[in-house]
Length: 132
Image (cartoon, rainbow, N blue to C red; front, side, top):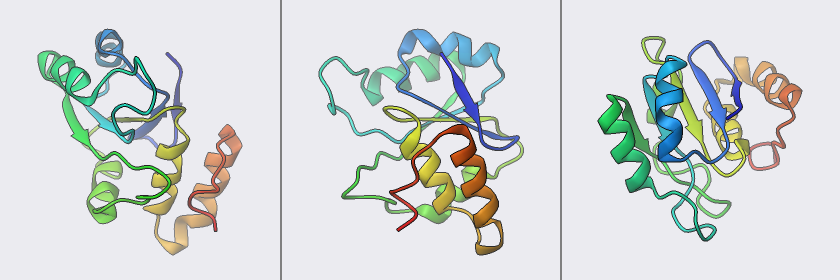
């Protein structure tokens, strides 16, 4: 399962499964953030399934699902705090990692915005959700 590092404390990934959780623990992640609503596609692992696996492995699980209509969500400041918490190693996931990267850019202060856009675009993420 490929992960893409945005900062020292934040990485993003495409949809994960409960079976991926032990690998995330081995990679040192302490927190998993779901940015994908349930039932976007048939067969997608649900937030409940991922949360159960995270709880069993001792990982914090945070629900912050957004789509194009609800972006950037209800608590962008809280999400920024989590993304910037240097005491955590956070993996945020969605369908491809793109929503997560857009959310990260949306949480950046004005002074850090250009660098964040450069990092995310350098990895290959489409930032059309946040850069309008």
